[in-house]
Length: 223
Image 1 (cartoon, rainbow, N blue to C red):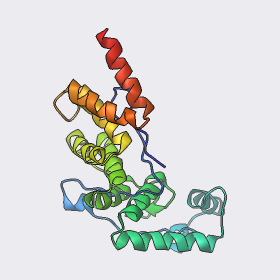
Image 2 (cartoon, rainbow, N blue to C red):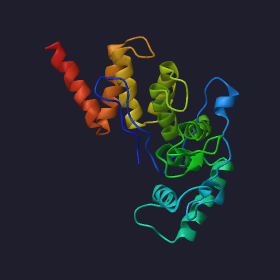
Image 3 (cartoon, rainbow, N blue to C red):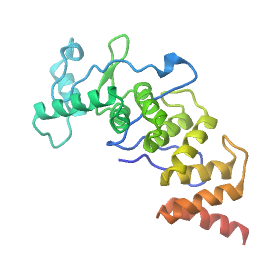
Image 4 (tube, one colour):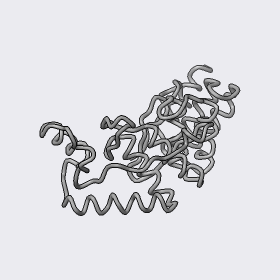
């Protein structure tokens, strides 16, 4: 899955994308960048999470953890464990995928008081950060969106621009469109219409409809 790209000339409001691509967060403090241990397995619900829950609440947890077309629970758990191990060993793609799972709630975590979270943006951002540091474009894009929206990290449009640029320079089409939008609006960077057009054009060449619409709008406004 991929994160939605920038809204037309408006600051990004997208959700994170890419079940199959990963991410981690890093703000300026080490505490924000810290990634806690996972508490959830796919395939079965850990006792630490179900303690004190009613049967109805347990079933609701299962719905969040298991996909609609459920495969063998043991196979799901095995895949999730393998993903976690790959992420911990430094695999950027696994880190990004794990970040997506925590962002969307496909993997369940809980806070310090033991409350089960529907999703965990902070943990997601942490994984996106790890992958982004390795130059993984999808993670850079995902983390950039989190900085734009202030999800899991403190809002920082300057940091978002830097991350979008890194991803855009690797050919990430949505990052190119978002970067163009930020140059056009002057969000997190000095307004530069020529630079905006450059990135819109690069994204449009890859078939990005939003970027093409942005170019068409710029052209129409000049007529």
